[in-house]
Each structure stands twice: as C-alpha cells, then as structure tokens.
Length: 316
Image 1 (cartoon, rainbow, N blue to C red):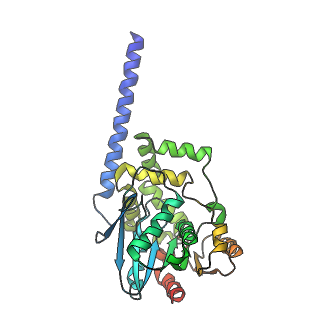
Image 2 (tube, helix red, strand yellow):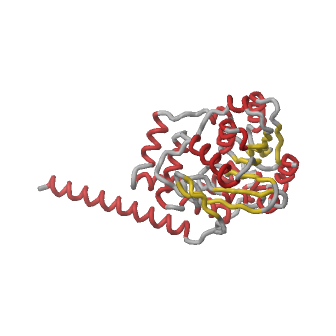
Image 3 (cartoon, one colour):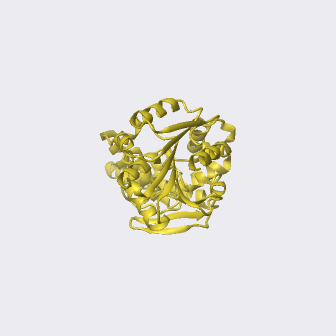
C-alpha cells in the first residue's frame, strides 16, 4: 500500500510539474508578443520551406540586408538605416526562416538551408544582381551563397563577422545532446524560455553587443524578446540548431575563391576586431576593413549615422 501511495504521489507531483511548466511557457509566449513592436507593413515570400517575411522600399540598385542569427534577431536590426539607404537603393530586408515574423518549422537549420533561401530570394524576389550587407554570423551565409552563384551578388559588406575559427565549429556529442534536449516537446520549451529571456537578452546587449550600456533601451530589448517568442514553442528549433553548431560553416576556402568586392566593418570596442580583419585578409588580400568608433557588435543600432557613412562610401 505504501508503494502505491508513493507511486501516486510521484505521478501527481510529475503531472503538477509538467502542468506548471506548460502554463509558464504559454504565459511567456502570450505576454512577450501581446503588443507588437515590429512593423506589419511587409510582404510574404512563399518559400518551399516556409513563409518568409520581407520588406521592400526605395528606388535604385538593389541592396539586401541580412540580420544576425542570435536569439531574437529579425529585420528590426536595420530599422535605423533603411530609410537613408532607400534614397539611393531599392532596399530589401527579410527575416530568415526561424526568425522574427517568418515561419519557424520544426526542422534542423543549417548554413546551406540559409544559402538556398538567400539565392532563391534574390532570384525570385529581387530579380537581379544585388549588393548585400550582413550582420554577425550571417556573413558566412552570404559568403557561401556568393561562392555558390557569384552572378547574384555585387558588393558584400560584412558587419561584425565571426572569427574564421568560430565559423569552422562543427556539431559535437555535447552540442548534439543540447540540441536534442532543447527540442523535447515540453522540457525543451521550458529550457528555451530559461535560456532566452528578457534579462538574458538585456545582459548580452549591455555586455557584448553595445559599447555604451546606457544606449540599450527597453524598446530594443522588447523587440528582440518579442521576435524570440513569435510562433510559440517552435522558436526553440532554430535556437537548438544554433547551439548545436549546425548553422556554422567554414568559409576560409570560399573567401579565397570569390572575386567580389568585400568590405568588413567592426566596432572599435570589439576585443578581437583587428585579429578578425587579419584572418579574412589572409584568405583574400583585396578585402577592405574599417571600424565604427565607440561601438561593438551592432554599430547599425548603436551609431547608425557613422555606419551609414561607410555604407555610402562602399556602395558609391
């Protein structure tokens, strides 16, 4: 009888725990997206793996902006520079599959998946060769897409690209285990909400992404938090692929083989920006580099005026 009582208590406790976790997950998804900070005047590209949210504005030669792939990334990242750039270019932005307002299917996200997305988007939506500006880890996507089909790309600007060592990281037993845990139906969602929350996003911006922590606004953090919660629990799949190193791809060889004009911009307060520049120039000596002073990972958000000066010079 005692064993039956213990078993009953264990079952009741487990059920209550799971119910609590489910309730917390649902509450977080609802409260994070109840008041949208993202623009809704956008178009939809019906891609074969899911609907892609994108925008188009301005007139002139086409320019595609690709956001970073950190948790909460979306085309919101470019909000400060879209309008000025649209005076001389037809500016396209998109939310990569698994990010922002684009669909978030329960799949493994890889570098090649995004390479296909970018090439298809340029062929089917942009319709002609374009310039491209990337942010953070999306640099490897653009480089590999250019290596696949150089005819689609003109000039390439890489803002705060990863080190070549980081791009070469591959899935390991540990990262595969973490990916598996994050993709569990209930526990994985709970883990995701612990690892990607308002306080964590705010801390990362103040510590790693912005040079001046006082430039980090509540509106900015809310926008990233909201984007990380759209489509509910499916948000965890792209995060699990990111943590599993599935989105990485070594671009050293591709850098040495493409002939496009490449320009790297880093924040001057990024600790290893000089080393990053040397790594890329070692693979391709024609790569130009420069810095936006008093910024870190996101000069387009922290000091858009100075970044725009570099954009206009590079894009002519």
